[in-house]
Amino acid sequence: MNYCKVVAIISIDDYGLISDSLAHFDLPGVSVSPVKGFGDYVNEFAPNGFSDNLKIEIYTTEKQAREVSQVLVKRANAMTEGGGMVAIEPVAMLANVRKLNT
Image 1 (cartoon, rainbow, N blue to C red):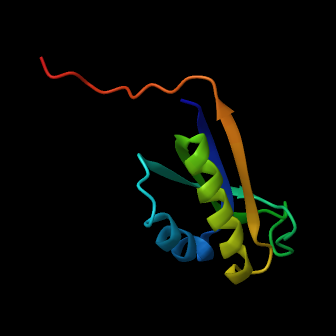
Image 2: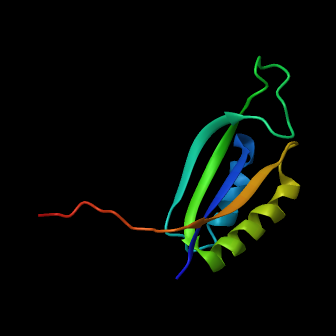
């Protein structure tokens, strides 16, 4: 089975739109991290132009990665100015590492 990582970088203000959409999928896990940067939107009030954003990472099957990315892209119409980005990256290996109780 082929696995992929879906990466989305969006405005913090838009996370509610995305989280509701992701809840409809049976995802094995979702990681959300705060990040700073700029793309189409440059924060004119910050010395470096960076704005506060979120990076969402989802490891899942190739099929589901495409479905998730399509939903995220469709939700972009409701996002704030500047939108965000969605990428799908192939994963060479995926291992679920857990602490064993001994």
